[in-house]
Length: 445
Image (cartoon, rainbow, N blue to C red):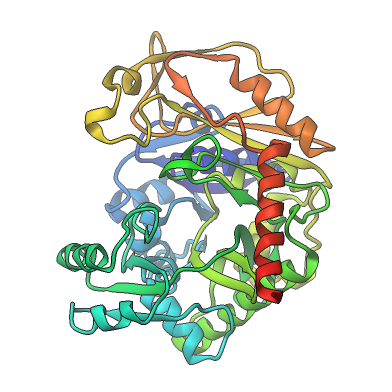
């Protein structure tokens, strides 16, 4: 029996827990969670509720349960150095050390890494630790993107045209960022379509999983504020409608070079997930950012169709043996739609407070998978919090069928909830294809 410790409590971790439970290696799962996720709890033999910045409690639980290795789900425990703490007591982990997690936690570290080692994919950028020089650099850019240095929960990036309009506003945002962060990275605004390429890395070998497109905008037709992600889709050919195999290869090659660069820079092998957020532009694939863990919702697209035993994948990452394991994904389409409180993503004064603490009911959802996120299980049922509630995933031979399965399942969840019905639909995907055609045409012209 393999004893696995899972750290994390969201829908991403629910998908990881399901992948562990599906293993033929007779695993026993223990879960350390910040809040009690009923989906994870139903799959785990032991559960402990605690804080991610309290390593003593996590280590004690790992020893108590006899964990052979750990899988780290969210970014917070990585940033606190839990992988280092586990390693100190002889427990390896699928996840990078604190120094290597800077790939996600420090935008400046990652941009500088690519620049130092001559890795393509960087937009034009500069890192600033003070306001000096920012105005001059902004004047050189046609469009501006501001990225605080440090964790922001996926919601800290500010884009001209979306979050602010003028350079004066950009300067004001920079002053605010520098009050709470050690630095700010300023980049040129890119034009194109985004895709997520989650890669498995054992320190030397990097293996790509199927690309996914996330939808961060709160409302239909990509309107409203950015969120943690309202849903995502992947295609049965393991490409995307606007994305060919050459672009996927380019994203994978960038990640392989980054894995080697970070090993040369730190002397430590990166063992875990290197999730690149990329944009395909008229001039090729550009790196938006790296995350040091699976994406949420993107993990829910790729883990259910993983046919290779997940325990074997974890062991290969830890042992540096990914080159000796065949990683296989089903040729299936997936569509994930997040069910959220109706007030999710809105300013506090526009939010329906009642919806964020309301009870929901779930009818039968044949053919779909449900992954619990911010859900509170009480004696009288399931209650939402203020964040995303349930990831609903349809899996099928075609994108159209997967979308219908997901949409049908969403309608079985009753309460003051909302979702984006357009994710995975033909009109929205056609819009993305036309967007790329227009960009390429303008580039050629």
